[in-house]
Amino acid sequence: QVQLVESGGGLVQAGGSLRLSCEASGGTLSRSAMGWFRQAPGKEREFVATISWWYSTDYADSVKGRFTISRDNAKNAVYLQMNGLKPEDTAVYYCAARLSTLKSTDQHEYNYWGQGAQVTVSS
Image 1 (cartoon, one colour):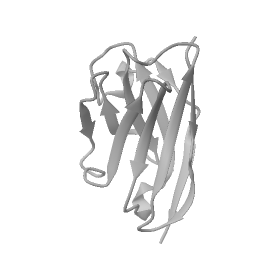
Image 2 (tube, helix red, strand yellow):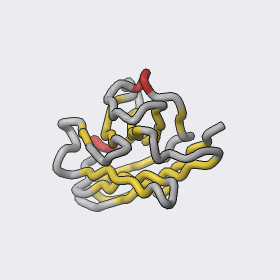
Image 3 (tube, helix red, strand yellow):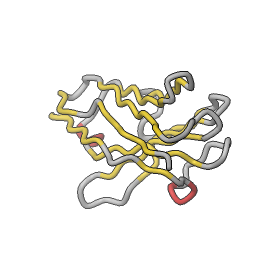
């Protein structure tokens, strides 16, 4: 059973940066597409970024140009570098793994989920 654990969340000022990490155990992620999703209070969970096993990426319009998703298969990890953070980025961020090599923006196509990491951006 694959387990995903996020880390790197916290409180940051607007305009600041954070890097979220997601490490997997119980299996390799090398052939799995990965995604980051987030859920703000009172809102539905939304897509943030995804990366295929061959490192093709896609981003939500709201974060494009500010966030970068990457992966390190040797470390069985995926990352989300967040720059130029805004208060509206405040949310719980989840990493997810899909039993497919193809990236996806659809949360329903992901099979494994982390517990979430809180990111709070102050104004």
